[in-house]
Length: 206
Image 1 (cartoon, helix red, strand yellow):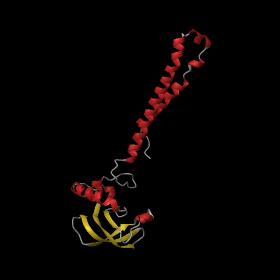
Image 2 (spheres, helix red, strand yellow):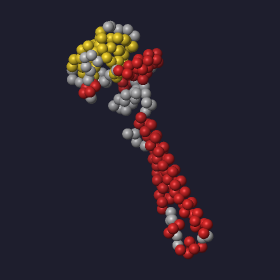
Image 3 (cartoon, one colour):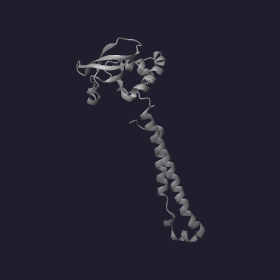
Image 4 (cartoon, helix red, strand yellow):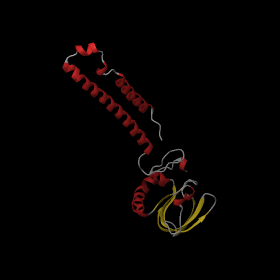
C-alpha cells in the first residue's frame, strides 16, 4: 500500500489534535458550584448544546480530514483504472505503451501447447486476425513465459480461443483476453494502434 504523504500526515495530526483539544476541555457539568450558581438559567441551559455542537464540528472536521487522506492514498494505490499491469518496480504501463512493447498482438485458437524450458511454454496459434504486425502467417508459434507458474488456473490449453499481447520483455507473462472480453478489446486495440505506433516502449519493459 502507498504510504501517506507528508501533507496527509499533517492533516491527520491536526485533526487528532483538534479532537484531543475538544475532548480535554472541562465540561460545564463539572464546573465549580459557585460559578454555576452565578450563571443565568438561559446561559446554563444553552452552553452544553454549544459544547456539543463544538465537539461535533471538531469531529466532523477530523473525519473529513481522515477521509480525504484515505481517498488520496487509495487513489494513488489504485492508479488510473486503465487495466495496466505493474512490473516489479511498481511502474504501470499505459495501454499505448503495452501495445508499443508487444512484439505481436494476435487472435486465434491454440492448436498445441507444449512445455519448453523451465517457466516457459510453446503455444501454436491458428490465427484468425493479426493486429501487430497487421499481417502474418495463418499458423504461428510463440515461446512464452508460462502463466501457470504464477497461477495454475491461468495455464494455456489446446482449444483455447485467445487474444494475445506477446510482450517484448522475455520474462513477462503475456496479456490474454477471451470470451466476453474479446469484442471490447479488439475495438480498444484498433483505436489505439496508431497512437501506439508513435509511443516509445519504456526501458523497463524492453
